[in-house]
Amino acid sequence: MTKEQFNILIPDYILGKLTPAQDEAFSNFLKEHPDALQEWQSVNAFLEEPTPAPSTQMDAKFYAFLEAENTEKTETKVRSLNEPKNGSSYKLWLPLIAASVMLLFGFYMGKQWNTPSTTTNIASTEMEKSKEETNEVRTQLVMSLADQSSASKRLQALSEASKLDNATEQVIIALFKMLNSDSNVNVRLAAITSLSKYIENPKVREGLVMSITQQDSPLVQIALADLMVTLQEQESINSMEELLRQPDINAAVKLKLEESINQII
Image (cartoon, rainbow, N blue to C red; front, top):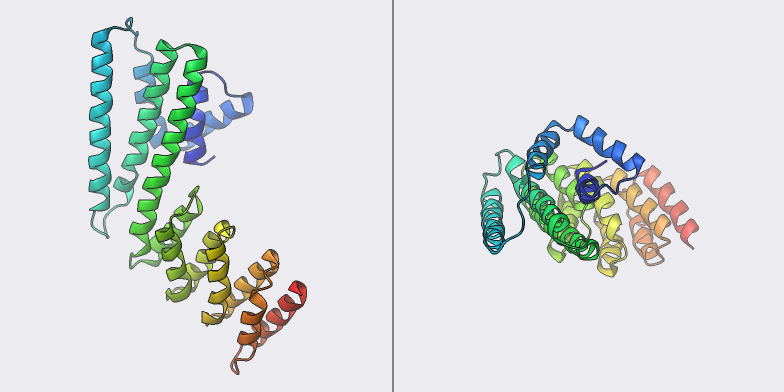
């Protein structure tokens, strides 16, 4: 189970709607991730406190709390983006943690003060909001790591990009920059994997086809040829034939390209 899947299950856990399998997975995640367990214990302690009857004063305090949390969350995002490039990436995750805590609090208040149907609507709205915030923070993380001098950091950027629900144009540009000009072959291979998630985007498909002739690594050339066969991308045939005409082409790559063209035709 990923952290994102864990966050999605939190509302149903609070409302007691998890299936036995989901409940077991939820508990196992907490056992395997001490940081998540500590965070959950803090929130759970809050949820177990006796709840007073709703009042006008309580409404005012509640909205003041939300405003303070939102202000702190915004400041945390700014601080995380201004961290030195060689510093720890942990602070970049603080907005995700804040979003999770806010989501828990919202579901708790909805359970106490709303009818079942209203609670369901609030739950759906809060979940969508949480997903949007997670996607936004993850996008910022990708852009921050993509320009790092460390290959491992750039690989982390590609890993995070693969988890995005929707990649922005800036993220797509960053991924193609790594695919076409990164000095590390492993980074370029990982970029293909990340970009393959967004092949429904015509610009991504076109960019992958154009990238075939820009590669000098046999491993990357073969990986792109395999992807073109999977996609049955007719437009890639011209690019692969152009690569075949290069006098210094690797023998294994030549054989792979010829096979790929035959499989697409």
